[in-house]
Length: 178
Image 1: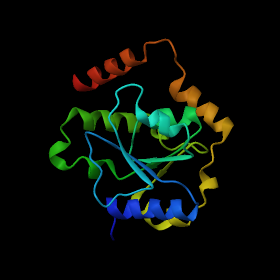
Image 2: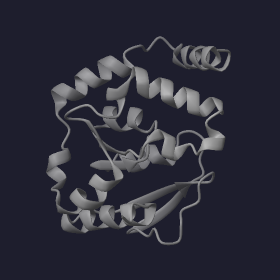
Image 3: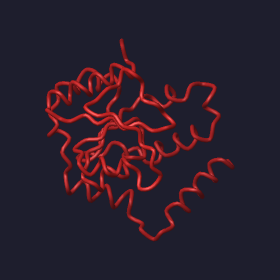
């Protein structure tokens, strides 16, 4: 079928070319950029805070990622999020399914499936959809809907009491101690 990362990238590149969009590839030190991935510019985010990704999002229209928490930065910054969504069991190969990360990931997706798939702000697309459909899509199909954006922000980012990290750590500890 050719459902692999290289073909996903080729589809994104075709989408950008079709829409006359600048393609910035932002890598991270922990996950080097494969040599076949080349955009108009390729960078590696080495900053701690503020992360370079925030600068890049300030001029972006769309952000493509694989199940990334960057969705929580994209949406408030008016950047549409496209979550490339392989099946979770395909990400965590069998010998890694015992890891706490797998449990946390399954829990988040089980309790908040619309975190990554919320009409008008973030769209989940399977690898086959990315490869077959994305190259022919118009970038305007991913425009942020301000009403939906406000709903999403209220639903997922409402609390600004300064205790968000504490709540996240508490939830992770609960999952690990199950």
